[in-house]
Length: 187
Image 1 (cartoon, rainbow, N blue to C red):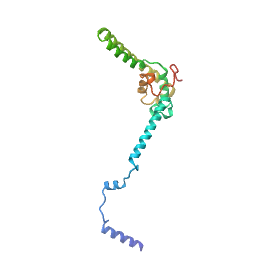
Image 2 (cartoon, helix red, strand yellow; image 1 turned 180 degrees about the vertical axis):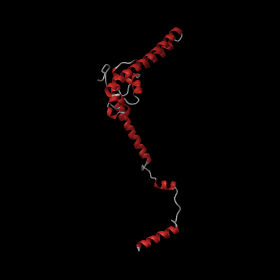
Image 3 (spheres, rainbow, N blue to C red; image 1 turned 45 degrees about the horizontal axis):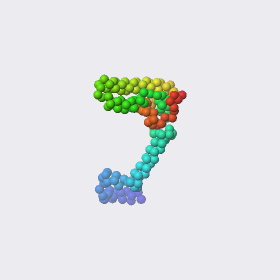
Image 4 (cartoon, rainbow, N blue to C red; image 1 turned 60 degrees about the vertical axis):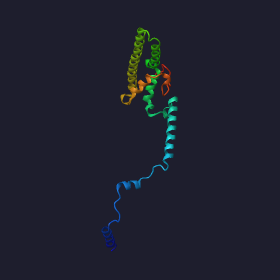
């Protein structure tokens, strides 16, 4: 008999209606929404502090050569091998920036004589093209050594730009700092 009573109650409720309009989706979502962080300002401050500590740890790792805390683009045995191979050699790209500064200064002093000015410009272009050629040759030989040691599939993306940027940079300004001396090629 309890079943008959329940059925009658449901029928009575259906006839009477539910007593209120169906809430809009926007109203239901806003009722369920709650802040993920109790105090957004404190949460943002904490996030900034964590990021600051993380960046400081990464910067220290870049200066010391500690690979555990380096950013992802510098981690791994292949990247270490690339860095060590580049740092072991002397490249013309290292001298392109100081050379260009010297060429600008020389062109300021010798701008009255067109023959000397054109010779300076020719010398600058010769240095730039020689540095580009040296960079391409170095990248080709480094790629060959890396693929012999790790395989072509482990070379990864972006290695060309990574290598070229490191080759063209002054050794003192390279980050992560060089850990090998000139001539100490990795095995």
